Length: 447
Image (cartoon, rainbow, N blue to C red):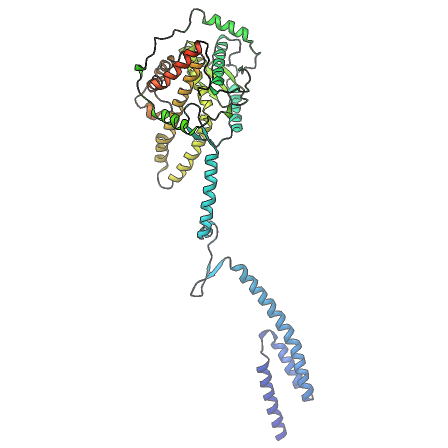
């Protein structure tokens, strides 16, 4: 009886010691029970102890280490990936990390890199696409490539020919011959004004009919002009100056000081074409790529060659200064500015203000610039430049003058254009070129 009690006491002590040495886990409680039951069912204490220890070590150690290792690896991999999405505050609370550009720009170093790289790109694009306009020496930003500009002009020209099919005068029509010969004089003057040999094809008529020989065209033109020669107005004097357009003179002076060279590469290899459309529209224009279109409504109001040359010279001036490409670039910046202002001001107000203070002033300035270039072209072509102010004044009366036209129209008023062209600076230079031309001394490099 005493031996049994002592044996049971030793058994309990050993059991308590074993439970302290080997920690129990919920996953392996059944294995622990097997070990304990195996121990209780053994006959020898030593064997029971050895069997217990060996069995439990086999059942627990591999299982515990394997499963815990997998759990720890999963837990660590989860936490490692979650670091991108969570952060812990000082109170040991997890929060979502901000994602996207907002999170990226929270780093001052990232902001600095973006500002520096963006500034470098903008400066490179800006100064890499700056060009100088012939004569006025004004610098402007052109983002549209020369090839794309020419392709757009040719595409519009083809669309116009398809739209006015049946209304395009044939090349042997007297009006077509007359306009073609005047335009040819303007193109030849442009080549002299640029002071370099341009690889241009001869000015051709864009009709699908047979082409016109030069001799036949000259004979028809002489027959048309017989008895109706242009009358040269009285001598022009410096005292006839009305006002001075300061921005052009300042731009020319600044360009000459810098030694700026006019950008004329967009005219290399250009294929000049002209088209006369039988429409009662008082208009003419020159598309990029040297595509000139004249409407017969213009010929009904302007009878002399000098008047027609003034209009064509003005339109060619737009092509020389790349006003179409500049307009596309300006409209892009205007659109970006409008989108920004839309966040703060009503869209109707933004559109009205941008039109009054951005689009229209820019358009009027381009028209004045084309007037100046065109005036020099007609003078070099042998047409009296003193006719130009009268042409624009007459054009203003035909299209309708208004006191607000200088502010609410894309074109300056005819009176305003006449005043600007009658001033001493530009008219004196044009008249000097004209006198040398009619005297047989062609002036080169005036642009």
